[in-house]
Length: 169
Ligand code: DLZ
Image 1: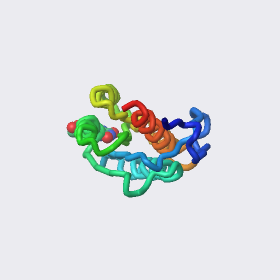
Image 2: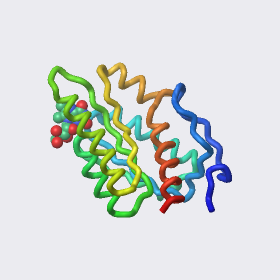
Image 3: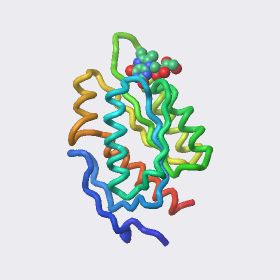
Image 4: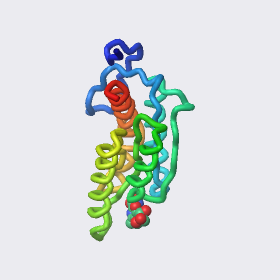
């Protein structure tokens, strides 16, 4: 049977201060990335970080499937469709929510986080919560660029969970 410890690829590229990841071999993993058009530039940086992490664990470019939706609220629905298609082993939902003057942020953040969790549990296709929920633009920039780009951790998380799923199912 397969095991993480026998995987040939060692990666230690997680975001500083974040969890340490085990050895990951993504060469057989199929990963979906669903991204929003809202906050396009920040989302694009996060997706770039995610794709770099996927590549570094050996995920083939041909096994990365990218889809776009309008905003974060649409992420769970699109994730469910992709999960049910059976074409991927894990999905990363990428978006950015910035707190405004109204309650919009609270409603959307709650709906999106529990929606993404529900899709993962109901379909048994792991769905990574790749949504920044920030108070300021400055916080967004810090978490979406350079060595603090959270997209990297989301990519590693997707591969780890894809392997877990492949082992179990
Ligand atoms: C409407 C809205 C607002 C105000 N802010 C954001 C945001 O910061 N990030 C984001 O991804 N989407 C935002 N949206 C759009 C909603 O997510 C959604 O697309 C619309 O409410 C339509 O369902």
